[in-house]
Image 1 (cartoon, rainbow, N blue to C red):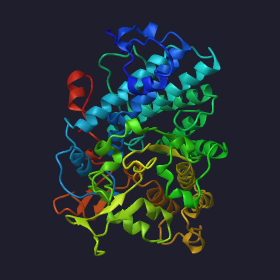
Image 2: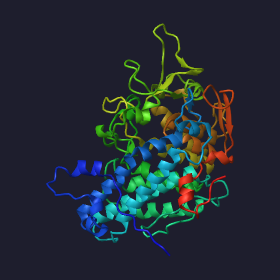
Image 3: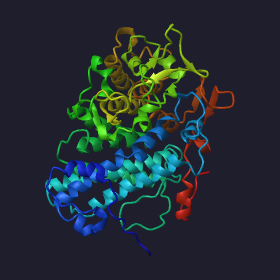
Image 4: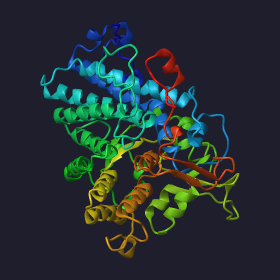
Length: 486
């Protein structure tokens, strides 16, 4: 059977930034064999920086965000556009969509890069090399997870029997791999993360993987897999590790403007420095345009009135600070078309730069809410409510604004309480659509936006064919063993 040997692909921009202080006569990676380029521990460390740099690519960071968030009911597109983000938002994906095509390719580039390093480190060679191997195993699992949640149906639909994505665990994988089942992908990712956690002993900051980062992603995977006991166990391990602390109520408003490594709550983020600022191609550019200069972004994707109405239930909730209503000079509410201009600022103003942001993928608040959801599903109502109240208290709420098992404030169940709090806390962070579909709930847009014929009503059932993205046409043509999504 024909095999492939993918050379180390990446991303010398970040790597060179790290190594230029060293007086080395560097050759281009592609001019060296894999054996030469990855011969020493220093080479393997440099190559690992390359694996992380693969996440910084817009094809990963920006498109991962678009695929995860633009399909949600937290946002409202204010007009038409020729950018295929329009198709993501409207659930009209097509096989040639550049967003899905580019994300698929970049995610597998990260996987191949990590595989190159994993294969060259024998377990137990040294603590430093074990750490690097564990970091790359984490990155490999993370990229597989993003792929399977976008292109495979939720695990809860058929206990993972549906087609997922090809598992690539070696540089010697088949040229034309078939799709593994969703269950097989989850089993692979969980095994990777468990081993990664056992290998990593260095407490690196949130720019890099470490044991607790692997635990945090395990908690999320187990929740998606409906293994609630395991989700609770691993969220609990992260919370009780004492490595992370919720930022204060006062600091929450500026949470996403700080650099990740200085933020006590951030578990893992894709670090962007000033050189990585993509200006109007940045994540924040679609959400925000500096009201003073009106020159920093497009500012065309707003917070939905559905989300804003939910947030308005408690006017003193400091999470109002992430949504900025735009007003005219005379005080009138500004609109674009029929959509009220509610700018979103979670991806703006890092280090005072309008569109600079280091997207946070894992943070401690999410661990509390994963533990809360797991407890709700296990029948531990008081424990679930307690964790929800931790998050609400940090948001500036108190007294009768908190929940109790005897006062769910009109919600039908403790699970409904938890899912609503997840929406409030994690809005615009790419999790809402997955939260709905994995819990067998429809996406409902009954608010103004450039969706549906009447620009108001759109409902997507969790089992609808278009609830997941199409396998890119380019991949289907290159790999005849891939089967398309309907």
